Amino acid sequence: MIAPLESTLIIRKRGRWHHTYGKPPHHFKTIAMDAPTHEESPSLALWRAHYQWHEPGRVAEPSIEATWDRVALAVSKAETHQPDIWRERFRSILQDYRFLPGSQVLHGAGTTPDAGLSSCYGIAPTEDSVNGVFGALRESALALHAGAGIGLDFSHLHPRGSSATSPPYGTVSYMPLWREAADILQGADADPDCASIGLRCDHPDIEGYIDAYAGHDLHPLIHRTVFASDAFMEAVGRKTDWPLVFPLRRQPLTPHAKVCERQWAGGTQPQPCLVYKHVAATSLWTRLLQDEYVHASPRIVYMDTMQRANNLWYAEQISINSPCSSVPLPVGGACNRGSLNLSRFVLQPNSRHPQVDWPGLRLTSAVAIRFLDDVLDISAYPLHALSKSAHAARRLGLGITGLDSMFAKLGLHYGSQASLDLTDKIIQVVRDAAYQTSIEIAREKEPFPAYDRVRHAASPMVLKLPHELQDAIASHGLRNSHVLAVASDRRLDQLAGGLSHGIEPLGTSAASADAQLAMAAAVQFHVDNAVAVNIHVPAATSCTELGAILRRAWQLQLKNCRVVRARHNGAGVTAIETDPMRQ
Image 1 (cartoon, rainbow, N blue to C red):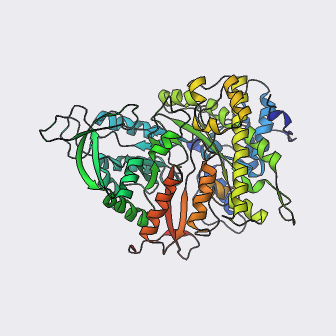
Image 2 (cartoon, helix red, strand yellow; image 1 turned 90 degrees about the vertical axis):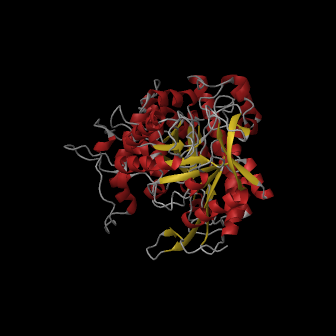
Image 3 (cartoon, rainbow, N blue to C red; image 1 turned 30 degrees about the vertical axis):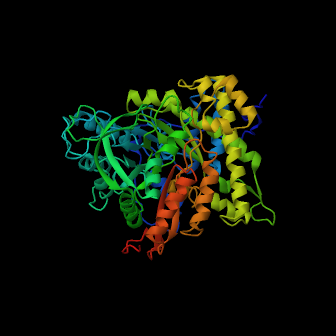
């Protein structure tokens, strides 16, 4: 019998609650993010710009504490039993930035019943036609307007110059549509992880897609993703040719046409594909590296690793990477994210013997999972189909941030064996508390609708859990298909006073690439969604070394990787080095 985690939580006593109801989130006060005055910290300026509720004609929220009050009250309304107790528990984990819910939640919860609170959606033009493309654009626009991030997959679209019956405009031609949508609907106030557009490494448009950034075809906040298969990575290692293909569908075959079979984006079975041409795998790889070298883009997503590790392997096909890169999604998928601020879980940080607050970490993880699960039920959704998909899987993404800030308080060096061992223990504690809580909620309410008792027991992450948790899942099910995702949310880290980002080291290139990869692998082993892997390296890193880092990430079974060369630009910020490539 597993003891309920929540029953041992000490409730924080507070004074009177203040709450009001207002208009949709776009009525929030928005101010220019100028340099803060000597009287206002960067954290306070950020809160005023992005999270303070200010309805015209009414008094604005006076403090971040009032924002936490509003959010805790709104989320607790999903609880039919003892909502006041849950309000106190939710408020207690928000206090002192111990738990950082997604920006959408801080911004919109408790403002209007129409507030969209999901972190991200997966969208794709599944119909290869003008209607299909503009239908996906409409869905994207609605999601962006609701404040959510969007992940897109363009692999369904015919390549440029195709002779198929569908319009042969090609994937790159449609990119400016999303650039304009992002600019109009979110503009300068956009979340840094606004949108991502992905394409398979075997799509015939892949070369033009890689070059799209140089042609300024994308909004700066739209990230590019290349889905690299195991077969492609192996072809690069063997230096063999690589076929660029597309599903045959209704395309007529010429006498000398070559056909192969591939499991295409979103599909569950291999289908006949027309081979458009062959390229040298190393040539395509070099092209990717050159772009990554100059722009720190595109992010490489290891698509087979992503699908193999999917808890819902039996019910969905992963084909989209969320813009935060921590949540692999199917078409129509959705996720709610939030992060535990590890720097707040150090006892006696200024003493000679600081310690990790293990009970606090475990309890906060448990309440945070319940919080995120409730967000699913109070959120509005831009489309019924997205609501249905979100509730079918009830996918959550509880992560960690401020890891190196915690190391600083504990006197540990990032990348040391002691830091790796501690990180492994931390993420195991968070994982087990998250799964235990999901079991308890399933027992109290019900498992997520897509849950299959027999097949879910064979899911990769479930098989890693302690036996008592596996037995409890078999008996009661799970409330959520996935529970963990580790992103790097710079805006929220700044709001919390300036933390190290996610699991990244403090400062650019403060740790070796090998140390950063080892840290990411230690965390990814226990995370059912994904870890957003950003490897920071010195400006002098060569293109060859960059390629070795990306291949090592694949070998370590990471789900994605992006390498950023950095320099100091004189303004105190990190920038991408754009000097000519060193081969």
